[in-house]
Length: 424
Ligand code: UDX
Image (tube, rainbow, N blue to C red; front, side, top):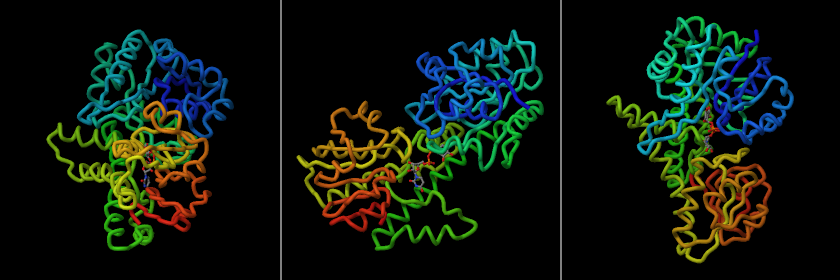
């Protein structure tokens, strides 16, 4: 069964979702307010850095189109996915302005539309948002009833940057949040060609599954880092410890890699939003508070290790390998490189940095540092910090260097004259 779909928001989630649905045989209209992005997509180019996405876009060119005309897109399609951005407020809570604004417009189109249209929230929102504010806005602007005159649900994504196409087409599970059977059935049919476990729940539960999934993974990382800090102090390799711990079938070995912590567009923001949203409901999520605190202090540990070997950084040049929040992406959102470089500059150090993909993005935030044209040039600095585990950094020659490693690489550990790992 194929559908005609509109996806509102051509960011990371919207683009991947749209192109993958097209690859599954559906007709997809991507919608964005940014006409440059729309033109880009209509030329068959991907507006985001994601391996495999542009090729899939080219393959499905006749089934993917983009437009700035939201109303026409809703009008001409059966199901609409809302995948607009959800930035953070100053207190860490989630800013849902864009989601609500888009829903107002959708509601106005639904007022005129005859057939049973389905609206699905893909953006990550606080549990209860779809069933509460979104439902209210859509019903008010359309004059119709959710579950009766139109369908409403939530369908969270679990896409890793750099692996998003694979994660979409071969997921561990598909979570369908629907409060009416027609919406649940339509989403089940839409995903029918994907071989995966499918969980159908209320929209509220689906939203909570998304937040809880990110929270448990972030918790594993901060927990591993806390144990890793102790391991370093008493001379134990935390990698060996988590190898052993991960062999317990009740504990997956994933997300136990110790170092300078997690970044990216999801973990920090979603955990903060969960903590802030819980607080607004009178619940204190103290474990997740600690997860965030540990994540803030890990990069400072790397700076402390550097100062152990070079106490006065004033006038020194420090080399930085890796600026992206993780390998295989150009994304620097919440990258641990941000606090590390801020710390270096405030200690008076000069910085020479290299990243295979993220230097253009980083230059906009830190124009004052030097960007090297190769990883090798960074090694000439007074000391080298490793902040992202890009594969190519394993192939460098670290002999004679001072290396402080935030990401557990093997080569510098074996070769460097002085080597310190944050958790080993
Ligand atoms: C994550 C989730 O994996 C995905 O399901 C969700 O939808 C969005 O957030 P992503 O942000 O792309 O995906 O990155 P991920 O690969 O999960 O890594 C997040 C951060 O954790 C990175 O900064 C990474 O370096 C760090 N990390 C990961 C560790 O520090 N240790 C680990 O063991 C694993």
